[in-house]
Amino acid sequence: MTEEQLIQMALKVRQNAYVPYSEFMVGAALLGVSGEVYTGCNVECASLGATNCAERTAVFKAVSEGETKFKAIAVTGDPNKYTFPCGICRQVLVEFGRELKVIVAKTPDDYKVFTIEELIPHSFTPDDLGKNSPEEDQNGF
Ligand code: THU
Image (tube, helix red, strand yellow):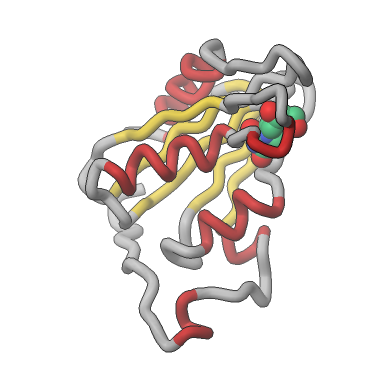
């Protein structure tokens, strides 16, 4: 799985975004250490606060399938501007490890890569509660 392939998967699932209110489509593709990819789009609701972002859709799909260790997530929103994960999604992503690669992409050829720790420094994590994060395996990506 390359970064470009992960971005392609995020772009594909972005087409399923349910966004009647904002009309702002987001797609995410989350690569687990198993090699499985979990995709997600944003899902809005007339009660706007019930909206779920694409990144969290992907994480919740993965965890509910039994995978909690991740290598990377690709995020695609506005094709003309890098769309970064919101604060709530950053908090959810860092729950599972500080070294996750976050690929913020306009297209498969135009993207930036960060670690989640760069995007949410000094975060509150399982460590603060005396717990371990699921560990990451950065090999091969
Ligand atoms: N959105 C995401 O899906 N991910 C983000 O990280 C930023 C925001 C969605 C939520 C809402 O459906 C729309 O973008 C506009 O805020």
